[in-house]
Length: 153
Image 1: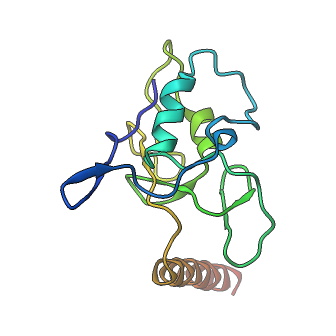
Image 2 (image 1 turned 45 degrees about the vertical axis):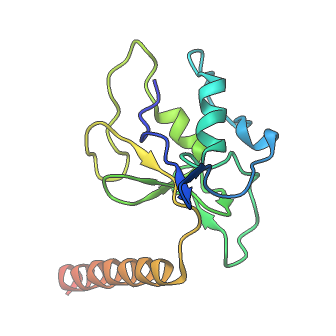
């Protein structure tokens, strides 16, 4: 069972409409799975991707300044799902790989270890979100460098 948010519906002047542009059929099916997912509900996966609740199974791209890297598989994509607990990005195929089979227990976030891991898809990050992420990464790097310098000195 996928642990996903309830399908989101954007409303336009009172009429319900799916979010975002139409998704090509080929982007609704995973193609790079490492392990076979015997209990994957392909129809549900297709609905979640088409409704905008889960990122499409994008083709991996070259890093071009706009693409974002999945921290699990290290492929670059136009956009990623985001962990509901900590906001870290993850591609749909890596998320599917982490999901438990019917026989296993709930999954913890691979980034912050929060129980009952779930993701949401909000499309590509804005420029301000990307800037904030770079600043956070720089701050972590500088902190690690200071600790290393104190321990070496």
